[in-house]
Image (cartoon, rainbow, N blue to C red; front, side, top):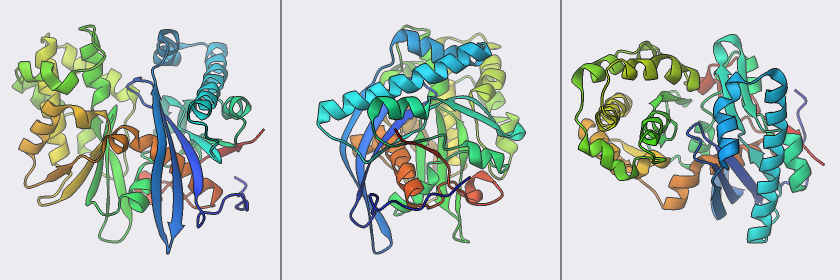
Length: 364
């Protein structure tokens, strides 16, 4: 990969305006977060100026959810079409708020993630985004790390280190939960804990609702101890070192296991919330302060169960903008790190051969 010298247009001391685009595995839609990042005396700070969410059209939602079964031509077409769609959303965002970011950084949408065979794929053509938006675009943040024998995930921890270093842990409860913290040796450690909204939303949708608001359905359910024990014994939880999860794990191991018990939706939700709470408790030490973001932070029942399972742990939920847009915010920051020639993929997190600068730049 050819390193790019930082352009005079990007000066972190004066501040860099970046727009982050995030599409999660839960398929809730597209998050866009515009922030200004400034480096002063070796410390990064940020200020979110505008943020928005776009609900996917049903046709696009269906395509993204079935992309793994498409033919090569259909997949390539979706990659192109989705990139153009993202670019149009960036253009609409700029028009709505009367802004022009210096760059956009797109996560894309993960379709395949199998780092054991050095494969990961996030669709959404960077060329399409740049062509439609008219601003520089950085995307494809994971593939270099996976090529270097890393997990390519999670990528948020570098943002946790530089932007949220006052907390003992940073926990994100999105489609999957991931956690990061500073190790005693000064390295950043992070990994995926388990699936969260990817599972909860899947079963809630069977009732005709997109998600279990405040965990009300889960609260009405009863925890099924046998299923809970089986979930807690899934082989993934015995792994150590850098590790990450994807759709394949849920569809191959979690859904078939849950489906074998024939439970009501409410009992499934209650049991799975308890499972998430138990697994999370294994990864936070007593007396710690934990920043919690992602959609799961708004699930009151889940947060109650997490607090009940933890020992003297302060689960801190920040302002709503940070909760809802932290991942988009950090992908904007990854774009800033790229133009500043600073590694964004940490080998201590992903297990890659060395720290590396993830991403590919598209300019029109």
